[in-house]
Image (cartoon, rainbow, N blue to C red; front, side, top):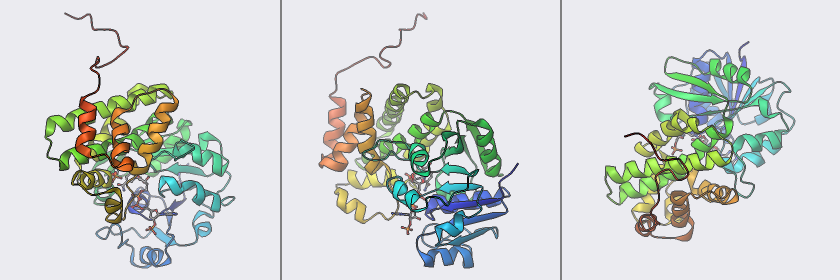
Length: 344
Ligand SMILES: NC(=O)C1=CN([C@@H]2O[C@H](COP(=O)(O)OP(=O)(O)OC[C@H]3O[C@@H](n4cnc5c(N)ncnc54)[C@H](OP(=O)(O)O)[C@@H]3O)[C@@H](O)[C@H]2O)C=CC1
Ligand SMILES: O=C(CO)COP(=O)(O)O
Protein backbone atom coordinates (compact mmCIF):
# COMPACT_ATOMS: atom_id res chain seq x y z
CA UNK A 1 0.00 0.00 0.00
CA UNK A 2 1.26 3.50 -0.80
CA UNK A 3 0.02 7.06 -0.56
CA UNK A 4 -1.66 8.26 -3.77
CA UNK A 5 -2.83 11.70 -2.82
CA UNK A 6 -1.42 13.94 -0.10
CA UNK A 7 -2.65 17.27 1.25
CA UNK A 8 -0.16 19.57 2.99
CA UNK A 9 -2.03 22.16 5.03
CA UNK A 10 0.30 25.14 5.49
CA UNK A 11 2.64 26.67 2.93
CA UNK A 12 5.41 28.01 5.15
CA UNK A 13 8.99 26.76 5.11
CA UNK A 14 8.45 23.23 6.34
CA UNK A 15 5.08 22.58 4.73
CA UNK A 16 6.44 23.54 1.32
CA UNK A 17 9.70 21.61 1.69
CA UNK A 18 7.75 18.58 2.93
CA UNK A 19 5.51 18.71 -0.16
CA UNK A 20 8.67 18.42 -2.26
CA UNK A 21 9.84 15.46 -0.16
CA UNK A 22 6.53 13.65 -0.71
CA UNK A 23 6.68 14.24 -4.45
CA UNK A 24 10.35 13.28 -4.67
CA UNK A 25 9.52 10.05 -2.82
CA UNK A 26 6.97 9.19 -5.50
CA UNK A 27 3.59 10.43 -4.24
CA UNK A 28 1.67 11.02 -7.50
CA UNK A 29 -0.40 13.98 -6.27
CA UNK A 30 0.50 16.52 -3.56
CA UNK A 31 -1.75 19.54 -2.94
CA UNK A 32 -0.51 22.35 -0.71
CA UNK A 33 -3.04 24.59 1.03
CA UNK A 34 -2.03 28.21 1.41
CA UNK A 35 -4.31 30.66 3.21
CA UNK A 36 -3.17 33.37 0.75
CA UNK A 37 -4.51 32.88 -2.79
CA UNK A 38 -1.52 34.69 -4.36
CA UNK A 39 0.92 32.29 -2.70
CA UNK A 40 -1.19 29.28 -3.75
CA UNK A 41 -1.08 30.63 -7.31
CA UNK A 42 2.74 31.00 -7.23
CA UNK A 43 3.17 27.42 -5.99
CA UNK A 44 0.64 26.05 -8.50
CA UNK A 45 1.67 28.06 -11.57
CA UNK A 46 5.37 28.83 -11.04
CA UNK A 47 6.28 25.79 -8.90
CA UNK A 48 7.98 27.72 -6.19
CA UNK A 49 7.29 29.56 -2.94
CA UNK A 50 8.77 33.05 -3.26
CA UNK A 51 7.95 34.04 0.33
CA UNK A 52 9.59 31.18 2.22
CA UNK A 53 11.93 29.15 0.00
CA UNK A 54 12.61 31.22 -3.13
CA UNK A 55 15.55 29.05 -4.22
CA UNK A 56 13.58 25.78 -4.23
CA UNK A 57 11.71 24.48 -7.28
CA UNK A 58 8.83 22.11 -6.76
CA UNK A 59 8.23 18.91 -8.75
CA UNK A 60 5.27 18.77 -11.17
CA UNK A 61 3.34 16.48 -8.80
CA UNK A 62 2.95 19.43 -6.40
CA UNK A 63 0.04 21.81 -6.88
CA UNK A 64 -1.65 24.30 -4.55
CA UNK A 65 -4.97 25.85 -3.63
CA UNK A 66 -6.31 28.38 -1.13
CA UNK A 67 -9.36 26.15 -0.59
CA UNK A 68 -8.53 23.71 2.21
CA UNK A 69 -11.52 21.47 1.40
CA UNK A 70 -10.25 21.10 -2.18
CA UNK A 71 -6.80 20.14 -0.86
CA UNK A 72 -8.16 17.59 1.62
CA UNK A 73 -10.74 16.04 -0.73
CA UNK A 74 -9.71 12.43 -1.48
CA UNK A 75 -6.36 12.72 0.33
CA UNK A 76 -5.14 9.53 1.99
CA UNK A 77 -2.41 11.51 3.77
CA UNK A 78 -3.22 14.83 5.46
CA UNK A 79 -0.15 16.74 6.67
CA UNK A 80 -0.57 19.55 9.18
CA UNK A 81 2.04 22.32 8.95
CA UNK A 82 0.51 25.41 10.56
CA UNK A 83 1.74 27.15 13.73
CA UNK A 84 1.04 25.06 16.85
CA UNK A 85 -1.10 27.72 18.48
CA UNK A 86 -3.45 28.02 15.47
CA UNK A 87 -3.85 24.28 14.81
CA UNK A 88 -7.01 23.90 16.91
CA UNK A 89 -8.89 26.69 15.10
CA UNK A 90 -7.61 25.58 11.69
CA UNK A 91 -8.65 21.96 12.21
CA UNK A 92 -12.07 22.98 13.54
CA UNK A 93 -12.68 24.94 10.35
CA UNK A 94 -11.85 21.84 8.25
CA UNK A 95 -14.04 19.52 10.32
CA UNK A 96 -15.64 16.69 8.39
CA UNK A 97 -13.41 17.10 5.34
CA UNK A 98 -10.78 14.49 6.29
CA UNK A 99 -11.50 11.00 4.93
CA UNK A 100 -12.34 8.16 7.33
CA UNK A 101 -9.20 6.15 6.46
CA UNK A 102 -6.75 9.00 5.96
CA UNK A 103 -3.52 9.12 7.93
CA UNK A 104 -2.87 12.46 9.65
CA UNK A 105 0.69 13.69 10.00
CA UNK A 106 1.85 16.43 12.37
CA UNK A 107 4.96 18.40 11.45
CA UNK A 108 4.48 20.86 14.31
CA UNK A 109 6.84 21.33 17.23
CA UNK A 110 4.92 23.02 20.01
CA UNK A 111 2.70 22.53 23.06
CA UNK A 112 -0.70 24.20 23.06
CA UNK A 113 -1.11 27.09 25.51
CA UNK A 114 -3.75 26.60 28.23
CA UNK A 115 -4.60 22.94 27.42
CA UNK A 116 -0.88 21.93 27.56
CA UNK A 117 -1.57 19.34 24.86
CA UNK A 118 0.87 17.96 22.35
CA UNK A 119 -0.05 18.51 18.71
CA UNK A 120 -1.08 14.89 18.14
CA UNK A 121 -3.42 15.18 21.12
CA UNK A 122 -5.02 18.31 19.65
CA UNK A 123 -5.47 16.48 16.34
CA UNK A 124 -7.09 13.45 18.01
CA UNK A 125 -9.45 15.71 19.93
CA UNK A 126 -10.48 18.17 17.22
CA UNK A 127 -10.49 15.84 14.19
CA UNK A 128 -12.10 13.15 16.38
CA UNK A 129 -9.81 10.36 15.16
CA UNK A 130 -8.19 7.37 16.87
CA UNK A 131 -4.64 8.11 18.14
CA UNK A 132 -3.39 5.25 15.92
CA UNK A 133 -4.23 7.33 12.83
CA UNK A 134 -1.90 10.19 13.79
CA UNK A 135 1.81 10.16 12.96
CA UNK A 136 4.43 12.72 13.89
CA UNK A 137 7.42 13.53 11.69
CA UNK A 138 10.23 15.15 13.63
CA UNK A 139 14.02 15.34 13.72
CA UNK A 140 16.91 17.56 12.63
CA UNK A 141 15.12 18.91 9.57
CA UNK A 142 15.82 22.59 8.97
CA UNK A 143 13.56 23.29 6.01
CA UNK A 144 16.05 25.24 3.84
CA UNK A 145 18.54 22.33 4.08
CA UNK A 146 15.90 19.72 3.19
CA UNK A 147 14.76 21.96 0.32
CA UNK A 148 18.35 21.98 -0.95
CA UNK A 149 18.38 18.16 -0.74
CA UNK A 150 21.06 18.06 1.93
CA UNK A 151 21.18 14.63 3.53
CA UNK A 152 19.32 14.18 6.83
CA UNK A 153 17.55 11.62 8.97
CA UNK A 154 14.13 12.00 10.51
CA UNK A 155 11.68 10.06 12.68
CA UNK A 156 8.12 8.96 11.92
CA UNK A 157 6.42 8.32 15.25
CA UNK A 158 3.07 6.56 15.44
CA UNK A 159 1.42 4.17 17.89
CA UNK A 160 0.49 2.02 14.89
CA UNK A 161 3.83 0.89 13.45
CA UNK A 162 2.18 -0.21 10.19
CA UNK A 163 1.00 3.34 9.66
CA UNK A 164 4.44 4.71 10.63
CA UNK A 165 5.92 2.47 7.92
CA UNK A 166 3.40 3.78 5.39
CA UNK A 167 4.52 7.36 6.11
CA UNK A 168 8.16 6.23 6.17
CA UNK A 169 7.80 4.91 2.60
CA UNK A 170 6.01 8.09 1.54
CA UNK A 171 8.92 10.36 2.56
CA UNK A 172 11.94 8.18 1.93
CA UNK A 173 14.19 9.87 -0.65
CA UNK A 174 17.89 9.88 -1.56
CA UNK A 175 18.32 12.88 0.78
CA UNK A 176 15.91 12.07 3.64
CA UNK A 177 16.15 8.82 5.62
CA UNK A 178 13.16 8.25 7.94
CA UNK A 179 13.21 5.90 10.92
CA UNK A 180 10.05 4.65 12.65
CA UNK A 181 9.43 4.95 16.39
CA UNK A 182 6.38 4.08 18.50
CA UNK A 183 7.18 6.70 21.18
CA UNK A 184 4.92 9.55 20.08
CA UNK A 185 5.14 11.32 23.46
CA UNK A 186 8.96 11.37 23.52
CA UNK A 187 9.28 12.42 19.88
CA UNK A 188 6.85 15.31 20.28
CA UNK A 189 8.46 16.51 23.52
CA UNK A 190 11.91 16.38 21.94
CA UNK A 191 10.71 18.60 19.08
CA UNK A 192 8.90 21.11 21.28
CA UNK A 193 11.42 21.53 24.10
CA UNK A 194 14.43 21.93 21.82
CA UNK A 195 12.91 25.20 20.61
CA UNK A 196 13.01 26.68 24.14
CA UNK A 197 16.59 25.46 24.60
CA UNK A 198 17.58 26.96 21.22
CA UNK A 199 16.27 30.32 22.43
CA UNK A 200 18.62 30.06 25.43
CA UNK A 201 21.48 29.01 23.16
CA UNK A 202 20.85 31.99 20.89
CA UNK A 203 20.89 34.37 23.85
CA UNK A 204 24.16 32.91 25.16
CA UNK A 205 25.68 33.08 21.70
CA UNK A 206 24.74 36.75 21.21
CA UNK A 207 26.13 37.57 24.64
CA UNK A 208 29.50 36.22 23.51
CA UNK A 209 29.62 33.03 25.55
CA UNK A 210 31.78 30.23 24.17
CA UNK A 211 31.49 26.56 23.41
CA UNK A 212 31.63 25.35 27.02
CA UNK A 213 28.53 27.41 27.79
CA UNK A 214 26.79 26.19 24.65
CA UNK A 215 27.62 22.52 25.28
CA UNK A 216 26.37 22.90 28.84
CA UNK A 217 23.08 24.38 27.64
CA UNK A 218 22.59 21.59 25.11
CA UNK A 219 23.41 18.84 27.61
CA UNK A 220 21.42 20.22 30.51
CA UNK A 221 18.62 21.14 28.10
CA UNK A 222 18.45 17.52 27.04
CA UNK A 223 18.48 16.46 30.71
CA UNK A 224 15.42 18.56 31.49
CA UNK A 225 13.67 17.35 28.32
CA UNK A 226 14.29 13.75 29.37
CA UNK A 227 13.04 14.45 32.91
CA UNK A 228 9.77 15.79 31.53
CA UNK A 229 9.57 12.85 29.15
CA UNK A 230 10.09 10.33 31.94
CA UNK A 231 7.27 11.92 33.95
CA UNK A 232 4.95 11.75 30.94
CA UNK A 233 5.70 8.15 29.98
CA UNK A 234 8.21 8.65 27.15
CA UNK A 235 10.97 6.15 26.42
CA UNK A 236 14.22 7.72 27.76
CA UNK A 237 16.15 6.35 24.75
CA UNK A 238 14.10 8.55 22.40
CA UNK A 239 15.99 11.60 23.69
CA UNK A 240 19.32 10.10 22.56
CA UNK A 241 17.93 9.80 19.02
CA UNK A 242 17.16 12.08 16.07
CA UNK A 243 13.99 13.49 17.65
CA UNK A 244 15.90 14.39 20.82
CA UNK A 245 19.62 15.08 20.67
CA UNK A 246 19.67 15.24 16.86
CA UNK A 247 17.12 18.02 16.59
CA UNK A 248 18.50 19.85 19.61
CA UNK A 249 21.99 20.01 18.07
CA UNK A 250 20.71 21.06 14.63
CA UNK A 251 18.46 23.79 15.99
CA UNK A 252 20.95 25.21 18.48
CA UNK A 253 23.91 25.20 16.12
CA UNK A 254 22.27 26.45 12.92
CA UNK A 255 21.96 30.10 11.96
CA UNK A 256 18.96 28.92 9.87
CA UNK A 257 16.98 28.19 13.05
CA UNK A 258 14.27 30.75 13.74
CA UNK A 259 14.32 29.91 17.47
CA UNK A 260 18.05 30.34 17.83
CA UNK A 261 17.92 33.57 15.80
CA UNK A 262 15.09 34.87 17.96
CA UNK A 263 17.15 34.11 21.07
CA UNK A 264 20.08 36.01 19.54
CA UNK A 265 17.86 39.06 19.13
CA UNK A 266 16.85 38.89 22.79
CA UNK A 267 20.50 38.41 23.75
CA UNK A 268 21.39 41.56 21.80
CA UNK A 269 18.93 43.48 23.95
CA UNK A 270 15.82 43.56 21.78
CA UNK A 271 12.49 43.35 23.55
CA UNK A 272 10.02 40.57 22.79
CA UNK A 273 7.97 43.00 20.73
CA UNK A 274 11.00 44.21 18.74
CA UNK A 275 12.12 40.63 18.03
CA UNK A 276 8.59 39.62 17.00
CA UNK A 277 8.25 42.62 14.70
CA UNK A 278 11.48 41.62 12.94
CA UNK A 279 10.51 37.94 12.55
CA UNK A 280 7.90 36.80 10.04
CA UNK A 281 8.33 33.07 10.49
CA UNK A 282 7.22 30.91 13.40
CA UNK A 283 9.59 30.62 16.40
CA UNK A 284 7.51 28.10 18.34
CA UNK A 285 9.60 28.21 21.53
CA UNK A 286 8.52 31.77 22.30
CA UNK A 287 5.00 30.65 23.17
CA UNK A 288 5.72 27.02 23.99
CA UNK A 289 8.18 27.93 26.76
CA UNK A 290 5.07 28.98 28.70
CA UNK A 291 3.13 25.78 28.08
CA UNK A 292 6.18 23.54 28.59
CA UNK A 293 6.87 25.25 31.92
CA UNK A 294 3.25 24.75 32.98
CA UNK A 295 3.27 21.14 31.79
CA UNK A 296 6.43 20.51 33.84
CA UNK A 297 4.86 22.12 36.92
CA UNK A 298 1.77 19.95 36.48
CA UNK A 299 3.88 16.80 36.89
CA UNK A 300 6.34 18.21 39.44
CA UNK A 301 9.34 18.37 37.11
CA UNK A 302 12.01 21.10 37.28
CA UNK A 303 12.98 22.67 33.94
CA UNK A 304 15.29 25.51 34.96
CA UNK A 305 16.47 26.51 31.46
CA UNK A 306 12.93 26.59 30.06
CA UNK A 307 11.82 28.59 33.10
CA UNK A 308 14.54 31.19 32.57
CA UNK A 309 13.72 31.40 28.84
CA UNK A 310 10.11 32.13 29.83
CA UNK A 311 11.32 34.82 32.22
CA UNK A 312 13.34 36.54 29.49
CA UNK A 313 10.62 36.25 26.84
CA UNK A 314 7.59 37.13 28.91
CA UNK A 315 8.77 38.88 32.07
CA UNK A 316 11.44 41.09 30.51
CA UNK A 317 14.27 39.56 32.58
CA UNK A 318 17.74 40.47 31.30
CA UNK A 319 19.28 37.37 29.61
CA UNK A 320 22.52 37.83 31.57
CA UNK A 321 20.55 37.78 34.82
CA UNK A 322 18.73 34.64 33.63
CA UNK A 323 22.07 32.90 33.04
CA UNK A 324 23.29 34.07 36.46
CA UNK A 325 20.13 32.65 38.04
CA UNK A 326 20.84 29.27 36.44
CA UNK A 327 24.38 29.31 37.84
CA UNK A 328 23.18 30.29 41.32
CA UNK A 329 20.97 27.22 41.70
CA UNK A 330 21.73 24.76 44.47
CA UNK A 331 24.43 22.25 43.50
CA UNK A 332 23.30 18.65 42.95
CA UNK A 333 24.30 15.29 41.41
CA UNK A 334 24.32 15.14 37.61
CA UNK A 335 21.68 12.41 37.65
CA UNK A 336 19.63 12.71 40.85
CA UNK A 337 17.97 9.45 41.86
CA UNK A 338 20.28 7.31 39.69
CA UNK A 339 22.50 4.98 41.81
CA UNK A 340 26.22 5.86 41.86
CA UNK A 341 28.53 3.88 39.62
CA UNK A 342 30.33 1.03 41.36
CA UNK A 343 33.04 0.92 38.69
CA UNK A 344 36.63 1.50 39.92
N1 LIG B 1 10.89 25.42 9.20
C1 LIG B 1 11.52 24.35 9.66
O1 LIG B 1 12.71 24.18 9.42
C2 LIG B 1 10.77 23.34 10.45
C3 LIG B 1 9.57 23.65 11.07
N2 LIG B 1 8.94 22.72 11.84
C4 LIG B 1 7.67 23.01 12.49
O2 LIG B 1 6.65 23.05 11.49
C5 LIG B 1 5.59 23.91 11.92
C6 LIG B 1 5.30 24.87 10.80
O3 LIG B 1 6.47 25.63 10.64
P1 LIG B 1 6.94 26.36 9.33
O4 LIG B 1 6.33 25.85 8.10
O5 LIG B 1 8.40 26.37 9.38
O6 LIG B 1 6.38 27.82 9.68
P2 LIG B 1 6.41 29.11 8.83
O7 LIG B 1 6.42 30.25 9.79
O8 LIG B 1 7.47 29.03 7.82
O9 LIG B 1 4.98 29.07 8.10
C7 LIG B 1 3.79 29.09 8.82
C8 LIG B 1 2.66 28.72 7.89
O10 LIG B 1 1.45 28.76 8.64
C9 LIG B 1 0.60 29.77 8.08
N3 LIG B 1 -0.13 30.42 9.13
C10 LIG B 1 0.25 31.39 9.97
N4 LIG B 1 -0.75 31.74 10.79
C11 LIG B 1 -1.79 30.97 10.44
C12 LIG B 1 -3.13 30.87 10.90
N5 LIG B 1 -3.58 31.62 11.88
N6 LIG B 1 -3.92 29.96 10.30
C13 LIG B 1 -3.48 29.18 9.32
N7 LIG B 1 -2.23 29.24 8.82
C14 LIG B 1 -1.40 30.13 9.40
C15 LIG B 1 1.50 30.71 7.34
O11 LIG B 1 0.75 31.41 6.36
P3 LIG B 1 1.21 32.86 5.82
O12 LIG B 1 2.40 32.63 4.95
O13 LIG B 1 0.04 33.33 5.06
O14 LIG B 1 1.51 33.69 7.03
C16 LIG B 1 2.49 29.71 6.75
O15 LIG B 1 1.92 29.02 5.67
C17 LIG B 1 6.09 24.58 13.20
O16 LIG B 1 5.51 23.95 14.30
C18 LIG B 1 7.59 24.34 13.19
O17 LIG B 1 8.13 24.25 14.50
C19 LIG B 1 9.43 21.46 11.97
C20 LIG B 1 10.60 21.10 11.36
C21 LIG B 1 11.36 22.01 10.56
O1 LIG C 1 12.64 22.27 13.86
C1 LIG C 1 13.50 22.73 13.15
C2 LIG C 1 14.64 21.92 12.68
O2 LIG C 1 14.47 20.57 12.94
C3 LIG C 1 13.45 24.14 12.74
O3 LIG C 1 13.83 24.93 13.79
P1 LIG C 1 13.36 26.45 13.84
O4 LIG C 1 11.86 26.43 13.94
O5 LIG C 1 14.05 27.02 15.01
O6 LIG C 1 13.81 27.08 12.55
